[in-house]
Amino acid sequence: MPHKTASRQRAGFPAFWLQRNFVSGLLWPISRLFALLARLRRARIAPQRLPVPVVVVGGITVGGAGKTPLTLHLVDALRRQGYAPGIISRGYGGAVSGEIEVHAGSSAGVVGDEPLLLRQRADCPVFVGKDRVAAGRALLAAHPEVNLILCDDGLQHYRLARDFEIAVFDRRGLGNGWQLPAGPLREPVARLHEVDAVVLNDAPLAAIGMAGSPAAVFSMRLEGSEFFGLHDSARRIAAADLQGRTLHAVAGIGEPQRFFDHLRALGLEFEAHAFPDHHAYTRAELDFGEGVLLSTEKDAVKLRAVLPPEVETWVLPVSAVLSPGLDQLIVEKLHGRPPA
Image 1 (cartoon, one colour):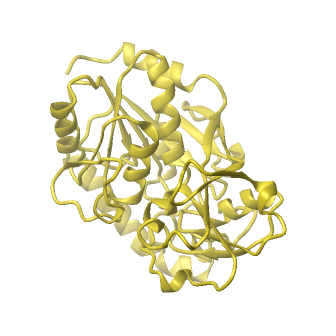
Image 2 (cartoon, helix red, strand yellow):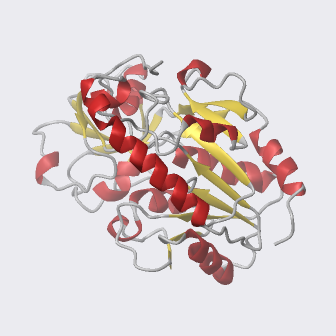
């Protein structure tokens, strides 16, 4: 039975990924080949363990579902549990060769937008690299005080041994339930029986059909109501200060509609401008005439290099709020971790 979402046209997934139709049916044989190759590749990989525990935050669907806000939440939660976390990431959208450390002033075009946001918000070491094992080793060599690694979007990077796995979903759920390219799944639904926890970002349990799964399930929502200035983060305004003005909302995230819905929930009226995830913006495509620009925090790390200060732009930061117990579950699992 195909999995459905409330809207079949949500940005981020093509329509044929949200329901099983003629187009997805034509692609289904290719998806079976993709699945076979993925299984063969996984079977040949020998996982390599780092000398500290590794927690992977990822997903079995393509695109963003809230993994970055969850990673930021876990940094704070695990610090309170006595850990000193570091973060490793692929650096998607960047131009990294090898493994490099991300600094607050790094270029998003080099290290990627999400790692740069993580570094600016988490205040902990962040390294990027295609080889997450090498990135983790480089981080630990540079920062020996780190005693736990969070791997952002690393569920399918099987060369990196992990001690705890988290799969994140948003309200799009499993789409049509088929694997790439017929559907949005990187791995089959059965993969959810292997993870330690599932986090549902503004999504009901029915969206992923998790009945009977051994994984612990947690709910998550994103909160944020105060904006800061793109070129001066000390400047703050409330949503009420923007009401009645000409507004243009820009989002290049996994599901731009999620950002637009958030703004509407704050009582704002605006013209929405959706871009692909990790989009590299140009000045010309942001010229909407008169008005004020509103941006996600992920887009802001790229917009600072594109928009001059005279273009009034406000950024909405969000924080993840979870049902209780995930950090404690992680700690309990790590206490039983085998030695490296």
